[in-house]
Image 1 (cartoon, one colour):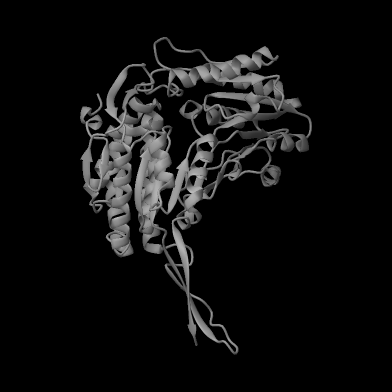
Image 2 (cartoon, one colour; image 1 turned 90 degrees about the vertical axis):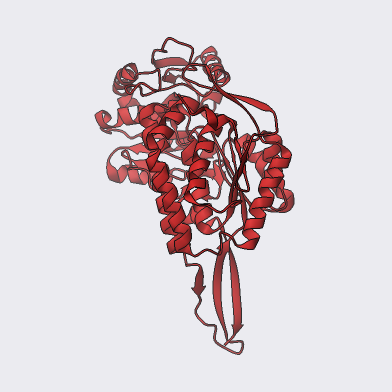
Length: 486
């Protein structure tokens, strides 16, 4: 059972909780199709009030003028509270967005703890170059001294998606608060209950009223928060279509925009790669969270000499992947977020099959009313086909057979996206191929664990700016040059 009070007051503005005064919304459990809660979205006046509160607290310096150590202490308290409520948050994530419980306990809720602790360290350390950087003096007839001041950018609108509701809040809110900004958080309606649970913990941690505000709203509210003249920056994760709308809304006031958008990421299995090592992770990378991740590697490239062996192993892996109730500890693949999204993905598959594509491997859907789509590999697809070009956000991958490494690189780069990639093979060869891929991140032979100190950035249409790492932290600052005669 989730806490029924989460739906009673979903707006948190200037330190006060209130029901939304916009349209009604029903949260549905993806794993069962049953109603979780009905609540009201924020209205336009609440959005304006949230911006006003953030503006007031920033201009008054109620948060940004606290010492780095004081800001860090609050962020560490948030991390401690996230850790304390870890199991309850994980179960809420399972109920609201359908992530399997094993993933909910790790990437969904344990990772945000690490992010807030990293952000606390960054608050104390400061951005690259420091909060105040003394420059070498200028010599000559106009001798002068200079410093660079790095100051928080101001009021930030943070817009987060449903697929990793708490972790995406951490990615955006933690560094913004560490920098000294004030924030208005607009989560996806489908991740709002998780967002309310997080805000309660942030409130308990002692954030001053008005520094962090929550307004779950519809597209009109989103447009208002992106276009508002008192907002200085928008950070958004989501689809390219909505990202374009964010940029359009922000353009008249020339505010800074950071966008983390879509992906259609490749897995390149080089000739002679160890298939026993490569196949299972390659399948899991596009099935994690039922494929609802922008970095999912949903285009798999395998050399012709290895194709049959790859498919033999891939079929066994997919046959053995348990699909079903996300509360079941054994489950690897849970549901998609809605029935409408599941039907959209089925449409892509059906159209591909009508054009001559084939299903190379497919899992078995569970019984029940949840929004399940079993993992599948699709073959006999052209690299330009829609199923190979559009982000599906589902556990569906296409397989390409190539003859030369140059051909593999060309197919891998044949995408409007450039967010993530996976390369398997001889370490030197794999690193060489990784360097030729137009993408923000490449995992070679499996890569490693999640690192808050590393930026997540997209090439091409996968985004503008960066999240996380020193580079992502730096997005929340402006730079002021002070110069005086020597």
